[in-house]
Image 1 (cartoon, rainbow, N blue to C red):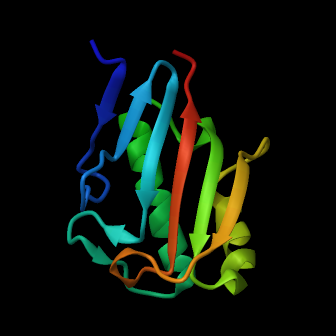
Image 2 (cartoon, rainbow, N blue to C red):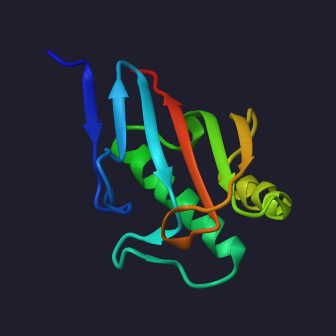
Image 3 (cartoon, helix red, strand yellow):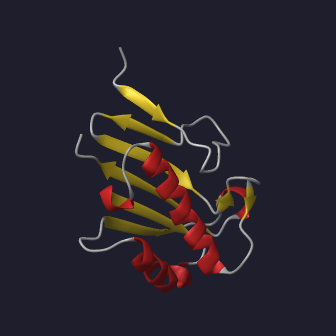
Length: 129
């Protein structure tokens, strides 16, 4: 019997490959990377970089909620950017979605992301039960 439970929601973009939106193992939930896709259209959100970052956080929040948690349960966040010059904006937008104590975090510069996105994030949640 597998201890892994896949998490799915239609409030976040559907997987575009061979992966789950998230997987729960015990009280830990591993959220797959989210890019700024609008769930209803599966197209990149229109607007500036702040809109893209916000859409990614909205997508992560939807998957976290489907797992029985919220962004407040994020203990580790990985941020992938095609331009690390956007990192200060990530901090600015992130402050609207998170409060102290903030999760541990890494910011990684990458050459390219799926569908030409400029930002992708994944996360790990730790739930009470």
